[in-house]
Structure formats: structure tokens, C-alpha cells
Amino acid sequence: TKNYEYILTSKPAEGVALITLNRPKALNALSTPLFTELNEALAELDADDSVGAFVLTGSGRAFAAGADIKEMKDKTYNEVYQNRFLEDWGKLTSVRKPIIAAVNGFALGGGCELALMCDIILAAPTATFGQPEINLGVIPGGGGTQRLARAIGKSRTMEITLTGRNFSAAEAAAWGMVSRVVPEGEGKVVEEAVAMAQTIASKGRLAVQAGKDAVNAAYEQTLREGLNTERRLFHGLFATQDQKEGMAAFAEKRKAVWKHA
Ligand code: CO8
Image (tube, rainbow, N blue to C red):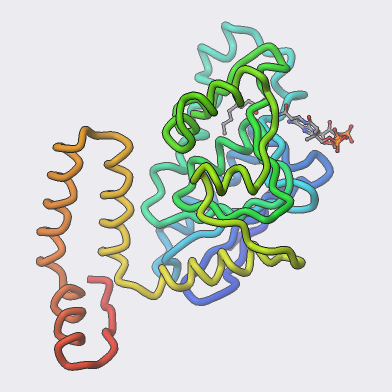
């Protein structure tokens, strides 16, 4: 993988791509150049057959403290509307492979929204979430009001969005927004996320992709449509070698060897 200015990429374990936001002096404020690099790295690694899952994390005191306020502050309505400001920030949600957010420190505004765009969130005890946009005279613009409402419910989302108060890793866990809080220790949350990503990457890729697509359907479709989507994806997997292998391996009491085909 190539060298970037605002992110770091590595392959810390078999099948795992780790992307680290690397603008620590600005608390990983999400500037346009940072997002351009992030999208480029995601596209490259999503197409890389050696990668089965991603971990996305921050550095220093932050996962990401939001969109870059200094970049945004002088923009006009005409400019943001005509240029569809922030539209390509959602590209992350069309990545095929699962993305685990390992959240350390501040995940505010666009940083919280970025975590919510990922498939699984693990939090360090230091993680601090929030949508402080109201304090800047705006509202969340990267899906915060929608994804947060689905993750933690209306009343809490209203409170967070309208008061701008931050919430802790413990609250995020109690509200079901994060899978769990990983106990302290230097880099611990990233280690846990990498281990989880490695587990996911060790499965058949087609089934993993179908699983991700099916769960995401729960956020896009009615129950009836979602159940139909799930059933069709389930049926479709019977066309794969991995289904034959997985079920044969069970019957023969041996470990499956996935062909990702
Ligand atoms: N943008 C630009 N620079 C930032 C940002 C930011 N969001 N956050 C921090 N920085 C910079 C600071 O300006 C400072 O730079 P410098 O050293 O040059 O003065 C440096 O990072 C360190 O920050 P602080 O000195 O402020 O550190 P503190 O520990 O005192 O405070 C805080 C930490 C509380 C996190 C504070 O920095 C803060 O409030 N930051 C802004 C948080 C915020 O309002 N975020 C929301 C931004 S709006 C937004 O995200 C819209 C979402 C759009 C959609 C995105 C889709 C993904």
C-alpha cells in the first residue's frame, strides 16, 4: 500500500487491513484531503484479495474530533450545495468488507458519524462521543441524526443533538451503540479490533459479505422486505463452493478450508 499524508495503512494480521487516521495535532479533524485519502485506501484495500476485514482507528487523543471546522468556516451555501460538500464521505458505507471502528478518545461530530458508518464499534474507556454541531450553529451532516437515532433511540438522539453534550464509552455501551468497552491498556482496543477482524477474515468471504448486506438491510428495508432479502442471500449461498465445503467439513468433523468462491 502507498504512503499517505493524513492516514497510515498496514496489514497487522492475516486478512486484516488497519487504517489509522493520522492527523493527531488537529485531533484527526476530517479535512477533504484526509477523506480523499481514506476513500482511496478503502477502495484499494476493498479490491485486495488478501484483505477480509478492516479496522479503522484514530491516533493520539482522538478517533476524530469532527469535520475540519477551519476548512468549513468560510464556505457559503452556494459552494456547499453546488459542490455537494460531504457527499463522498459516505463512500465508506459501500465498502463490501466489514469495517470495525476502534474508537479511542474524541469521536465528535463527523468523527462520531464516521464511527456510526462502520459495521461494528469497539470503544476504549477513554472514548468520548458527541454531536456538538449545535454549538457551531449547524446540525450533524454526515448521517448523525439518522444513524444515531437508529442506534440509541429518539429521545437520547434528540438530547445529544439539541444540547450538544458529549457521552461516554460506558453510556454508548449501555445504549447499545458500541459492541463493548475494551478495558484500558496501550492500544488495547485496536488489538481487540484486529483480533475480531482476523476472525471475520478467516471465514468464507462470500458468506461474510452476504451477512453484512443482510444486516444492513435491517436499516434500509421494512421487516417483510428485509426477511426476503435475507432469505434470497441465504438461498444464493447454496450456489457457492464454500457452502458445500462448510457443510461437508461439519459432517466429516474437520475444519473447513474456504475457497472464497
Ligand atoms: N476541526 C479543526 N480543527 C480541530 C477540530 C476540528 N473539528 N477539533 C480540534 N481541532 C484542532 C484545534 O483547533 C487545535 O488546533 P491548534 O493546536 O492549531 O489550535 C487542536 O486540534 C487541538 O484541539 P484543542 O486545543 O481544542 O484541544 P482540547 O483538548 O482543548 O479540546 C475538543 C478538545 C473538546 C475535542 C475540542 O478540540 C473541540 O471542541 N473540537 C471541535 C469538536 C467539534 O465541534 N466537532 C464537530 C465539528 S462539525 C462536524 O463534524 C460536522 C459533520 C459533518 C459530516 C461529517 C461526515 C463524516
